[in-house]
Image (cartoon, rainbow, N blue to C red; front, side, top):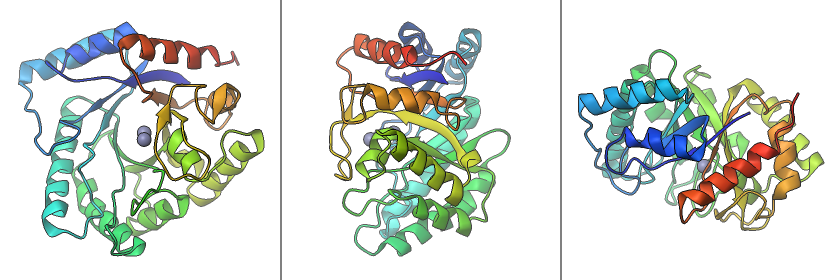
Length: 281
Ligand SMILES: [Zn+2]
Ligand SMILES: [Zn+2]
């Protein structure tokens, strides 16, 4: 398993590579724009060039891009929906320019109109969006804790979306450990982890899984509340993460940490800790 973390793109985008290197990242994740806004930061061509050449030199691979939180492709509101489609298109463009491998997004919220209607809307948007994708880039749907009207807490919901989109090879899944645990998948125990992965494989196929978000959970199993904790500081625990990073179905995947941090030292500490759990095979 390759480890990295989410790094800020504040300032010039190419400085993110520096931030990743300082933390000892082998892979990295950045936001495609302001995470809490709709506006996309416009990068200068030379900044993109700098980013690409610095990342290549650093050997940081793969690059993961996370979409802003406001994007809701499941929204029943026409205005939010069209803004979301536009923001996704912008993110796809940026991902291509940055030679990203994966563009991650949360399936969104149905805002009370019903799960199936929301999932259908996500699927409809993806049908047209994936035609904009070429090369190696994939869109990854991230599982959620399932609070409120949020979509994507259960594997069946991804089955629904993927079926509608004809099991396109341009789509895959990102599994967030904190979200899975909060949604009721007990990946903290040996049996629970095996059962969860077996269920994933049966319903979606383990080859649909391209990325792990490794976050411990501050909230209890099935709480449906998304609160990340540092590795080993939550209910999944160090033993849990040791089994996750060494599991035969997961150990060759890239792994991104989105753990709470006050400074870069927290990221470094979490990365060192999770890396120390990796067993030589
Ligand atoms: Zn995540
Ligand atoms: Zn989260």
